[in-house]
Image (cartoon, rainbow, N blue to C red; front, side):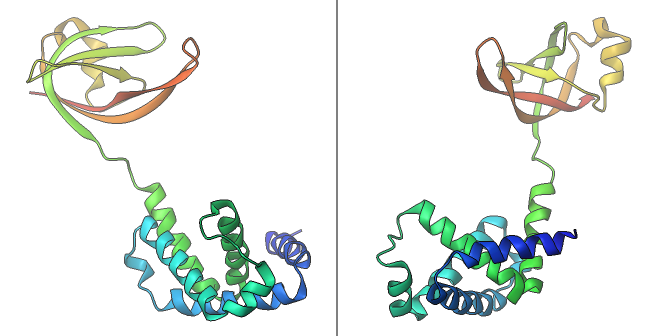
Length: 203
């Protein structure tokens, strides 16, 4: 069965459980939300801005039909995050069929943001040591004298010298690009933030 057909079945099952009045209102809210978001320059928005704008459009749509919304949903508290998220998902599914082109643009922007490379921090200092069995930890003393324990988990540009002549690397002045990562410690049964080496330039 094709994905579109499966999605249609899920959509029909979801809205079949809603009262007829609520289904009619949902159509109106989706139409109004599509009209609202189509007026926005989604291509130049960040993911956070998109989420906020979609929320504004949905709330604007709800504001156009206060009496019908009251009859269908009663006193829905806007501060009830779970209920509002569920409402947003229902309207979003309707919007997927009413303005798919706009929502595809939204999805494209979100994908670009999610796939963007993480920002790297640059540290300059002196290599003080390399240790470890399962994975290596490189100790770096920065220019202010602070010590940094940096993870060496995979290949990075400049790692050849660490492998071929580790003794000569100790004491070398370097510029290191690191990425903040989170790892799980089975011993502590918790997550810890560390810096992973992504590139080393010998100065």
